[in-house]
Image (cartoon, rainbow, N blue to C red; front, side, top):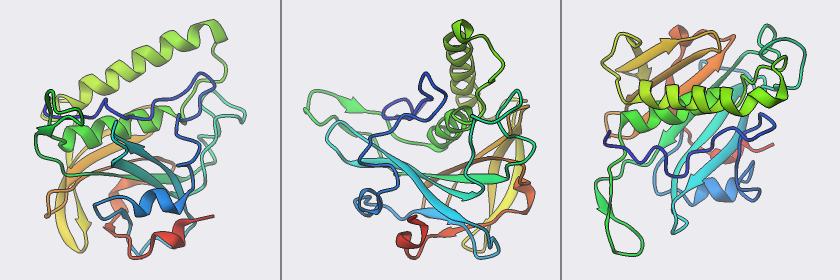
Length: 223
């Protein structure tokens, strides 16, 4: 796969929450350091908007990040997969469009980011909020490893039968996305006309009516 998707990805932690640098979560400054524009749902969405976290490379450069829309999801409520029947949310993942480049120490090359990178990050992001609360604690690590590997395999085969095609507007331009649904929610991934890999995941909110646009002021997402 031509992707750095596993580098800096925020996988679910042992308690079912997303791992992130404490200084990055909900900090506007972290988003302002990104050398690329952030994307979110367009103005047709009138609900709550909130920051999540950014992912950085070994040299501290921002490589990707997520911003949320709707209800802030939780896995601490009743039910097999958190509050899935009540929560309605969509998270947009923006990934830096990086060509093949040298590693920070100059000793090797890093693979290019791609649509698969966005698909992987979106798939892992969805896992962060789909922890099966009723599962025995001793089995959780095995479940997480299995699901995370599945997300990786699916992201590496975007032309496979697990994915369908969905056209959604990005800055008003119809854009083709790879799309899949599961018992946990939905995941999609595509690329803007400028070549920025874009992913999204959600639950309780249909992906079919969504539209994306560049975030004009990231401060509007800060809590």
